[in-house]
Amino acid sequence: MRPDGRLLLIYLLLVLGPLASACTDWRAQPVEPAQWIAQTHPDEVRLEQRNGSKLTLRSPAIVGTTIRGLRGRDTVQVPVADVTRVAARRSDWVETTLLIAAPPALLFGLACLAACGY
Image 1 (cartoon, rainbow, N blue to C red):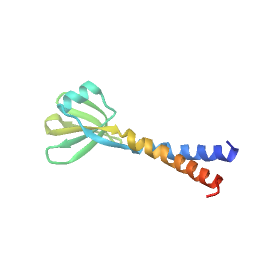
Image 2 (cartoon, one colour; image 1 turned 90 degrees about the vertical axis):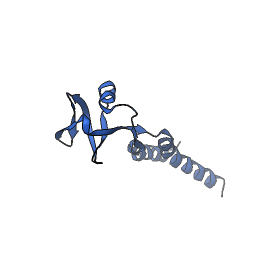
Image 3 (spheres, rainbow, N blue to C red; image 1 turned 180 degrees about the vertical axis):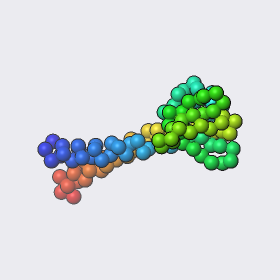
Image 4 (spheres, rainbow, N blue to C red; image 1 turned 30 degrees about the vertical axis):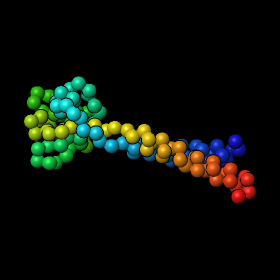
């Protein structure tokens, strides 16, 4: 590979690497919210409350009858009884793979076509 090809590859990895984390969505957990948080200790959760509002908390923990976590710089407490559903981030490996693999494959295909004179 020529030096400029390596630079292009490095550039693609630097640009596309951070995008890989964007291929996530929230998946609702099928168990009691407090039980699931206490057992799995997730880094981040999205809570759906009885009034329909959604709240994302980092570093959630069960403290008594509340779920305590960080929202921005603030510590927030939500009564467990007010939470109807808890969801956690889940990576979508198909989207991530396509996002990372498609651009280099396209460039390789175009380079092959150019080398063959098409």
